[in-house]
Length: 186
Length: 184
Image (tube, rainbow over all chains, first blue to last red; front, side):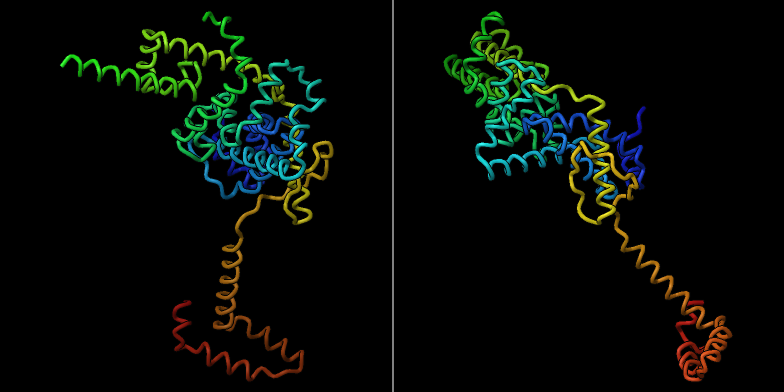
């Protein structure tokens, strides 16, 4: 049985780097994944993850860890930092969003399909809260309860956000999903 | 009577179809992810109703489309995670040396000094406790006269008289002093 987050956090607050690394190893992967999905940029996502971990260290002495562990708090920090960056992007150079949607280097590195690119682009057009709900529930596989915990709202509100988000994607990607209908035997 | 029953049944069926659509919109076509308390009823609807089946087929097609982007980003490897953690620790170290809010350090430059500061805590109570302890110790030493020889030798060496100090001390800490009783 691995050490509970609360114990590791207490050790972190005493300056224990090993405990901090254990927490980072436990939750950091998902932190990076969420930031990537929201920002669409791998390097910026790493900066967000780093910033989230710094905050974890700084606040380790005052955080309360729920039974579910520290994940929800860390994912929320990462999501908020990512959304802040997105807003700054939009407030700054409007063309930057389009440029950052599919960076050339990222295209090469990740060898994504054309469909993946279109879906990702459509996802980036979805309003922030809906997109975050979609990322957490559909791509990170979190339960409705976990998603609600990260987003500090109710499962009913998450259901509404997911419904609106998916409907927008469905409308935007109708050409894509309709092509898949015959393949599933309808 | 039968007509009323049929109408009620139709209304219930329509409501269930509406709910089924809402569930598919939010949760997708994977029944395992539907709300547990509604799953059986919705699966029964799916089994018997062709409209529900068509809606479900669409939801699954949307799921598959969305899943195409699941691997748009490569998986987060151990090396990347360690690099990010190292970067965070370097930023914390930089913060402790400058007493500024931790900047995000470029991950390419993360191998910096590794004298890590302990996380920030509230030290106000520690400082208050220290001051209170100092006060109590000072009062005790003054009241018991333990330090009197040292004070005398110091004042003599400095060529001063301690008569006023002694008088003041007696006024403050005489045997009848309630403060002394409290302290002892």
